[in-house]
Amino acid sequence: MADPLLRVEDLSLSFSTENGRRRILDRLSFELRSQEVVGLVGESGSGKTITALAIMGLLPPSAGIDEGRILFEGTDLLELSESQMRQMRGSRIAMIFQNPRSALNPLMRAGDQVARAVSLHHGLDGDDPYEVAIDLLRHVGISDAANRGRAYPHQLSGGMAQRVLIAIMLACQPRLLIADEPTTGLDVTIQAQIFELIDEVQADTGATLLLITHDLGVVSEICERVAVMYAGQIMEVATVGELFRNPKHPYTEMLMGSVLRVDRPRPLEEGTIVAPASIQYETAGCRYASRCPYVFEVCWESRPGATVFSDGHYGYCHRYDEDPA
Amino acid sequence: MEVSAPHREVRPLPGIRRLASRRPLLTLGISLIVALLLVAIFAPLLTPYGPTETNPAATYQPPSRAALFGTDKFGRDVFTRVVYAARLDLAIAASVAISAFVIGSVIGAFAGYYGGRVDDLVMRGVDVLFAFPAFILAMAITGVLGDSVRNVIIAIAVAYLPYFIRLTRSEVLSVRTSQFAEAAVSVGNPGWRVLLVHLLPNSVSPSLVQMALVFGWAILDAAGLAFLGLGITPPTAEWGVMVSEGAQRIISGEWWVWLFPGLAIVLAAFAFSIAGDGLRDLISTENR
Image: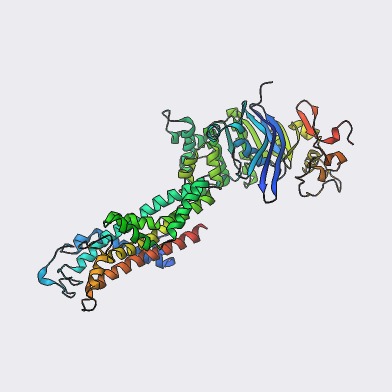
């Protein structure tokens, strides 16, 4: 198999807090192959957004990388200088943010913001960047693009603003596109349209898409593979079909069980769902241990290694050890 | 059929009549400013005399139909001088307000954005400037630089620089964490461009209000300096110079020589001060 486009290896990251350093991401490893659509799922606070920011090199100053590598096309992004990283952003790796309306400059017309991205990444090769920008707006499904291009962000609806952001991404032509909960705050019908558009853009440009979400329905529809995160640790990685049919990790099982489905009655018995406890960041073992229904003694003491269930399906759980003591 | 998300129309700017009924002070301030500007622009049309034109035969004439505000010790027409002085004083105030705003905002924005040692250096400098009352500082700077209109502008602008630096810095500090700033970085914009194109324009509204206030203060300061004999000197037609000349005649009863330029200073300072207050209220109620 060809080298992956992005490979995150044993990435650990800590935040400085009043109570000393707290490890937020713990030995995170996963890879994205070229032109693949991968979902990164997990509940709020599981470190999904921080993972994305780490890849973009946009971590807040209080965050520090403890160990690990982020290899993009073979280069370790963590080794790059700020100006080298700037060359990567936009043109190689780009990101779509939550809350699209706040991701646009409120004082600049939508068309101008797209045009800036166009001229930033294509230089001046004859075409008027503004013309290109309006074409892009049309391309992402904005009707009456010439007029909407003159609108300020506060005059746009959330869905429209997200389309503008996607047009900016199109102008950048990145190899890797990270979409961080791109439909937060949009209503359901618009959400569906936006996901469809993102899916379309991915197929058109051949970019790799890392979709961060907690919507398993969306994951099942547009992703090929899924990585499940809990409290800054990867729990399980599998293809979408495998994960939904055959979840191995207790956390994934619970996650799947939490999806309400019309084709079966409420699947979980009383007591199967453990109330969210405060996350055990300090533990040397598995961070899910405090919520896990199958917890063993060893879960508190050591971090489980990877168990490969089938090709491309692996997870981190002591339950699958030879002899879980 | 193409389905599109709803598009909201721009709310039209409030009409003048609505503004006048809801913001009477702001309207009054702006009207006075406009009136002052018109007077300054059309000075030559308002009076048949020149600002430094003397008439030894008619010194210290009380107000009359020929000389509305009377004449001074050289027989110069006080009305003419008050009207022409509006040009100089407004020009000085505008230069001070604009240059302090532009330079102060840019310095403040850099300090806020880059932080660290640059920020420390700038902010300690601001503290030093703030330690002196603006007028005392302007006096000292004019004293060092020497008397000229340009030096008066520099002196007063420097004295008000810290206000703009501090305001813009704190705005940039809050705007830089906003998502559009992060998004601008994430598409590959270099830091300076994020700062100048995205952060600075979104950080200037408090400074714009401050600018209106500084405009009024600068008129007071320029006139004050001239009154003390610093900066602008006789025979220039300037309100402070005229009050200073008239002050020697308070006891002997030629009140028109100092009263009219004094009223002009009060009127101008008042106009900019209520306009500035009105703008601040407008911004804080409509935007926050």
